[in-house]
Each structure stands twice: as structure tokens, then as C-alpha cells.
Length: 355
Ligand SMILES: C[S@@+](CC[C@H](N)C(=O)[O-])C[C@H]1O[C@@H](n2cnc3c(N)ncnc32)[C@H](O)[C@@H]1O
Image (cartoon, rainbow, N blue to C red; front, side, top):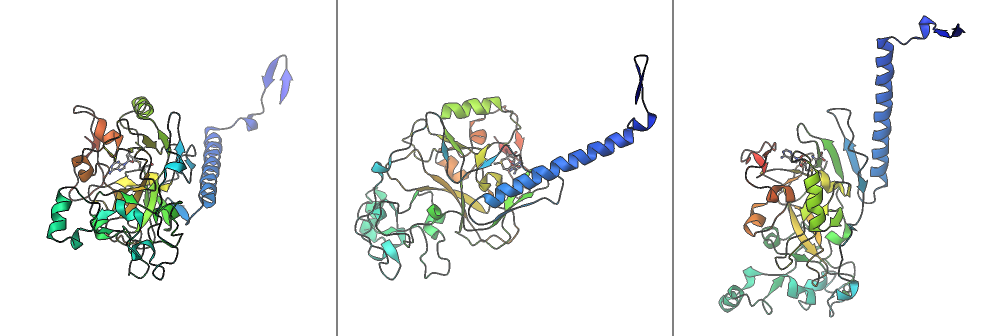
């Protein structure tokens, strides 16, 4: 290139043609995509616990990098968790009781007091007490199958079918790690795949069979106040994905906290809704004195085939009947709001996600 009389004389061979420009653009986009994919894969590899893979056979996209994987929920501004000194543990249990059966062996575990009543074992008199709500002296059942069962660690039927809070033994319980009443606190044991669905964005699945009652993972994110959740919801459009979950299991809590899994969370933030779901969310607590902060844990409600997408009902009917909101978007929108169409494809699909 030479300068002549102030005007630039340009060598024609250096002027990019439209074809050259679009090739350069394509290769820059390809490089950027490769980098984003590699960075997401690195984050997945570094995320502790059983392996999580990313599979996309539909397009070139990668989940957004503005999302951070976290192992535990992060408390937002104005959110307070009851201190460890409020946690009650059982007192009479010991590690390795009853050849590893643990707390349930003696039936003396204080945590049993908070467990669900074992209705199958009630005699007539006990049933009357149960119906009057006098549950203290009634036989109780621990939530999980023991190590000698065919499905160790899986939720027992009475819990699977109910909405009872699951109280696991905690750091103050002397039973130790072998106790069968510690499942969710040990974290995810199943390997998972984040994959691109046909029309519901990213989804989650497992490439091995998951048994009915098996624990999958918890829902995590930033725990925020209800006020902050409303602000965040107002600033996002109706058609935007929602990652907000109310911690409103206990009706005595007036302004329940909310978990926002949009920018930080676990892999369960990729679980889509189905009107015929194979998973359900359960309340799991380690502190009977804190009704504000607890785990939202996903369990399989039936056997799930390898590679079948994991789903749960965002508008869980039983929860709705109990007057609790599961998904803010779903429960707080009023009649007349734009309907968000459900694309679960189930035979019994209710057609709309947010009512
Ligand atoms: C918790 S996110 C699930 C992961 C999400 N698919 C993604 O790509 O990140 C919830 C959002 O996924 C979409 N979604 C989930 N289930 C759906 C369904 N059955 N029909 C249509 N969209 C769905 C909606 O956009 C919803 O707000």
C-alpha cells in the first residue's frame, strides 16, 4: 500500500471480498464456540462429585458461561440461616448399631420423633391418635431403605407417596456416617448428562438406569428474599426461563425465601418440566428448628431408563392442593397473563406451564 498525494492507493488483492469476510467470520465464530464449549467442559470436570457430561447433537450451542456451578447454596443479602447451635441431634444412637443398620435398629433415635408415622403398623387405638394428630408415641419409619435391602438408600414407599419432610441425621447425631438416615447430605452419586432437547432448551438425563426412590441431586442456587425474587421476576420477561423456587414448605413461615438457580447452582437447574414426570422434589432438613432453609432434593418416582430425560412437574398438584407454590413463575402469574406453552409431549399434557 502507498500513499500518493494524500489519497490512499490500495492494492486490490488486499481488499477482502464478501466471501473472504464471511469465511473469516465463520472461522472466528467457530473458534469462539470452541472456546466456550471447552470452558464449560472444564467447569464440569472441576465440579466435584459423579461425572457430568455435556452432549449436543442438535446445534453448536453451549449453556451460558454466566452460570457458575456451586456445591452449596449461597445466602443472598438479608437472608439468615439458624445457627448450628439450634441443630438437635439424636442422643442414644451409636455408630455400627445393629450390624450397620444404624439408628432404626434401636428405635430409640430421637430423630425418629420427627419422622413420618408408619401407618402400616398402627393398631386401632393408635390410628385414632394419629387421626387426632397425636403422633409423639406412634411407631415411626425412617425414610430410606437400609443396606441389606435390594434398593439401599432409596426412599421407602410411604415417603415417596407423601409430602412429609425428610429429617436426616445431622452433624450433632452420634450415629456417624454409616447411618442409613444420611443420603441427600452425601450428595449426588449418579452420573448425569446435560443435553440439548428438541424444543425445551437444555435438559438432563442419566446414561444408566435410575431406580424408583433413588436420590438424584438437590436444587441449589442463591437463596434470596421474597422481595428480591419479585424484583428479579419483574425485570425478566414472561417468556424468559425461570429458575426460581420457593422455600415455602412450612406454612408458618410468612415471607419464605426463594432459591434462584439462574446464575449459580447445580446441574438440576437443567431439569425440564413434564406433566407426566419421572422425578419429584422433596423437602430434606437437618435442622428441625429451621423452617426457612432446607434442601430441595430430587428423587426418581419410578424406574427411569438409561438416556430417558429427567423431568418433574413444575406445578406439582399435591403441592398446589397443599397451598404451596413450587415455581414462582407458575404460581404467581394471574389469569390473563400470557400463557407459557408446555412442550413436554406427554399424553396428559396440560398444555400450559404458567397458569
Ligand atoms: C429450570 S429451566 C430448565 C432448563 C432449561 N431448559 C435451560 O435450557 O436452561 C426452566 C425453563 O425451561 C423451559 N422449559 C422447561 N420445561 C418446559 C416444557 N415442558 N415446555 C416448554 N418449556 C419448558 C422453560 O423456558 C422454563 O422457564
